Image (tube, rainbow, N blue to C red):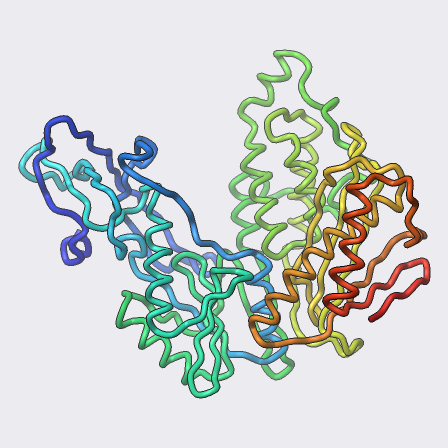
Length: 468
């Protein structure tokens, strides 16, 4: 409460006639370190934003969050280039931005003054309001531009600060900020300048970010990502701490479909209280951040979030058995001595792997040095009549990621040659005139964008090579 009073977050006023006030409540949280130990106990007042009215209590909503691949890219470059990594945390992030509408909030429990008809008229944004992320993002962007940072077009949540020939890359995920630079002194200067505009904490060398533990071997230029503690917490949450490890993510040959969904009201009731969506969400978060090995399984399970059957739930639990056996797996970044190329991309697809609609699943993995920075397992939007077509469409997905990655690298001014290793199982790159127009356009996109514009090598697994 002292922080809010010194910050001028609100004025205590009597609720005007005809106006409505939002509710408020206390939220308590335990912030933990990478090893699960308690770092601090936190509490904050949160507005009940669910009752906000569009056009009255808020105008626009938007949250400034990093592309997951951007985080992986910066960490991979930090390992290869031996960059210093530093973490900065914005203190009381949302209450540092001005509110954009007239909002009244009822006083918090145990802190009421002058009676129930007296409310807070907000001067600053508050946790729980729908517009809070957007308002802080806008203020943060203004501050970054004021101190001379350049905002990237490839990902607006990454900035570049440059002084005296020294660059600092600044990825921002709301209040979590990473600084990557070859100069620790430049990082200190940047933090000091940023602190003149925002209240923040300098957390020192980056070791924990978004539930990801980060460890480094600086002499060998290696960086490792691990989510061991996150998995341990989830196993405890789903009462699977003592489950037996398994070596496979799914039972070999298993194909989940809508036929496995409940067919009677009794089966529906049996699955009603199953924490399936929570479990799948946890798997998806792991698949996005550091565990590309579970991306396909998590994607398949997510297809049945609202019509799950016992077979789907058993497969989800099987995935946690697999995670129990791979707790200590880490994603490693660093230079790859076996190749001179910085980037290599692998693309492939199954054919008609989805039994419900006959669609195929594209698989893409982009590797920088020793570790993957982009990985995708995505159901294709069209039904393909052959493995050749399905694998070409996977190449289109990989090509789009390569184009984005190339633009990102150009903005970072770290241009490197790229290779697209297009792995197609005995598929021919020769196209038939009888294929659909949409499919042909997609495949020609690969040829034009990657070959002619970006000068990328395409290697077909059947032995054909194209290079500009």
